[in-house]
Structure formats: structure tokens, C-alpha cells
Length: 105
Image (cartoon, rainbow, N blue to C red; front, side, top):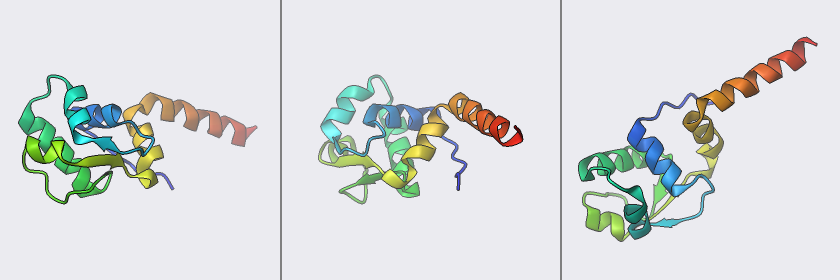
């Protein structure tokens, strides 16, 4: 069953930075890789992904950049495929079309 996931630009940036493989990413590394994203937007997007369950962390509340740097993050494996489709929506449409063609033939 496919889940419909809608992501903001900040959330997509975070997920691409972490990667969808499920390997833990240290918070210090995440902060280094994120680039010029504003702190408030970064924390809001990260807390949103954690609250929905798309991202797992070893801390419950992330309120500051110091909290982020002391935390490990990883993408929840049960959502990885759906998140990959949400990040690249054109890929999903092409895949769905090819499936429909096979069924009609």
C-alpha cells in the first residue's frame, strides 16, 4: 500500500542530506552538510520529520543547534520507499504508467 507523502522544500533537503539508506547520521555532520539553511527553518523541518516518524533520533526533543549536534538521526526504514517517491515524484509517475501498460496488454 502506497502512502501519499507531501514534503516541504526544507524537509526534502534534510532527507537528501541524511540519505534514505537508514544509516545513522551524526548531528554535527548533518549541520555541516546542510549549508545555508536558516536555523529556525532547519529545526522546524527536522522536528516535523521526527514528529511524523519519518526520521528517528536518539533524543526526543530537539530545541537548539546544540541538541542537534549531540544527536544521531536516521530515516525510518518503513517509510524509505515512500519518501524516495515523494522526493522524486516524476519517477513514481513513470513507474505507475509502466505498470498500467503491462496490465492492459
